[in-house]
Length: 205
Image 1: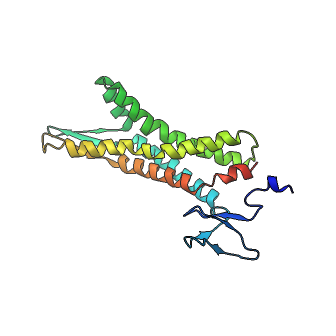
Image 2 (image 1 turned 90 degrees about the vertical axis):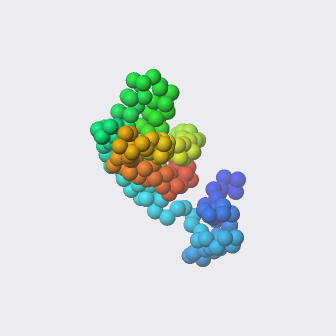
Image 3 (image 1 turned 60 degrees about the vertical axis):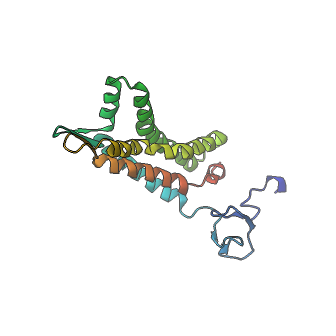
């Protein structure tokens, strides 16, 4: 095989996932450690596909209660009013705060769905051995991983409102069950993107 066409795996090169040092694999060595940080070296992330699928399925299951159950409860003059994410967006639209409504809609609805659907599409493309759009799929995964942290915006808004709007029996805001499910969805998708190995996109082709 032409040396210029060798992949890192074919050339026996191992990349440390902790310090990212590139190391040459020793012949006959069943297990190697990074000479720089001492971490175990793997050609690919161990059980990366299985772990990613498990985390994605978990995210899908958690998305239902995260969107259907109330995410916060507003107590005004003793009357409790639970609100889901959609109801919160409708409230901001009715009050004329369109910009905030759009931000919450993108961060709390579109971004989690885009992340789960995007990673699933990439996983399916690897299993089906699609040979096209390799760069585009890699770029899409990098975008998914970058915007993952912004999915916690809704939880951050609730935390700020709980801290600021606390007037005892007059007015108060408390987190509802959906907040826990939504945080679990965000954490699951972040872990799914971290366990996935992008090199599998190119190897599958």
